[in-house]
Length: 291
Ligand code: NAD
Image (cartoon, rainbow, N blue to C red; front, side):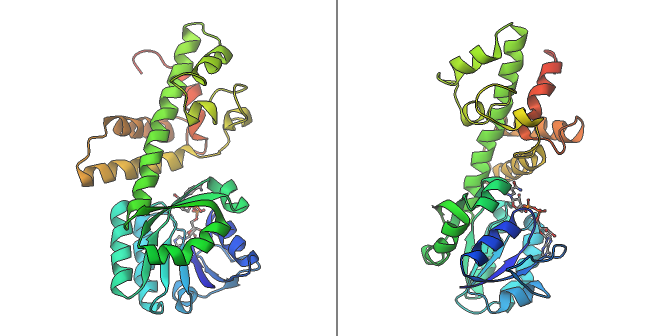
């Protein structure tokens, strides 16, 4: 396939390279990064999109996505598919998909989980919203860039799945960290706490697969000085998107709102910026009952 790839940052570059190494013809564009071999360089987003069967975008946020979509949708050929893999707000995902469909294009929102390691290893999970025909066209590409692609429903459903998942993850990580800090103050050994919780009803991915306590459970960023991993800044972004979506859909999400407040404080007022999102644990260790 001829693929246009726009947004060649930490995630986009390795994803685009995996597609090119699998034999697809990939033309890349980024306002900052130069496409690496075997990608072909385009002089503009429009040029990368013009002859493509599929255009993939991997951009920082919804506003930039809307700007880029406004430029490339008129340049794309009829019947081609516009597939956005960025994490953006549900409203932007739907607006861009609508614009693409009106121009005679297929449209998918296909955010990912798996991070930079998943992007370079081709083991991402794609959560996809949009019509079945467009999904079928892009599915072989998801198989190269990832290990699993779930077609979640209509446009916006991929972003909805992503932020619901990450709202659960953020809240669960916080409560796992505060439980370890409480256990410390109660004189409960961390290893014993892990042995009990990881096999009891308090178990979760945060505890069992990504334990925030150093030296406990499987290897995780806690064992590497809380170097990300999944950065607290990115968790904050996803929690903001979740609350934005909750407001727009009139959903009551009190724990999600509190998780947002706590990650906001962690990143903007404490030392959370640039650290893994599980580095909440050392913060809770220093706090008392009043917060
Ligand atoms: P990044 O900042 O490394 O990459 C974004 C790229 O987009 C940059 O290279 C930037 O120059 C480029 N860009 C910005 N405006 C542009 C424009 N107008 N035209 C062309 N290129 C433009 O970010 P990333 O870590 O690669 O993340 C990309 C997306 O994936 C984000 O939406 C993020 O939330 C999501 N995501 C990231 C991770 C992760 O672990 N990094 C995990 C899951 C999802």
